[in-house]
Image (cartoon, rainbow, N blue to C red; front, side):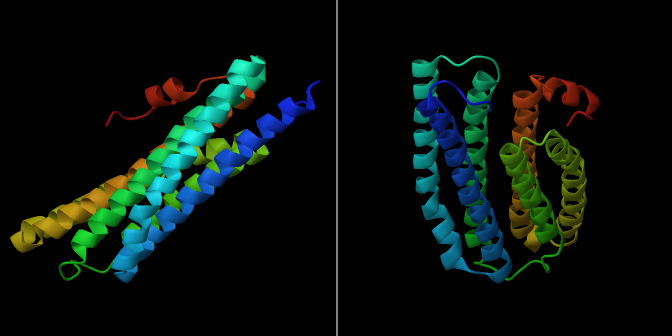
Length: 228
């Protein structure tokens, strides 16, 4: 962002960006810990993720308040205005990613009450892809890198395809063994949660493109996608 006449204004914009990135780091850790608790059968870690959600919620409110204050006091225009509106939308996506990490942890606690249905292979792979998308989306925010943002958007199709693969496999388990239905449904939920994380990372990447280029690519992309 270009420097302004008022140094404090520049500091406010930089501080807003830092706060968004701090929140990004918080939810990245929540995703990683939620998946670790599932893979390692760590109930204590799952509960820690659930409890940490309060911190993310507080951070969301703090960022919203900072952004609204800047809008009210500075009346930004052009790219500054796009940056602030982008920060507000990214903030919402990050908070929802934190909620999803909580959902994964809640399903993990339920799964730990029974023996594992199968070795976890594809779910960790899917989680790694979704986590990488979140990281790259946040990096694109820091760097103002449209190409990296586009790479994140392209990765969404890979995660969607992996979700469909996992769903079909779990459906096979349910058809073969009625006793496995409860565990399979919970694992299906987790796969869907990871797919939603990738969607939120895509949203962030789309907003970065909007901030830098001034073009809203959301509906352009949706028109090219296969309806769900």
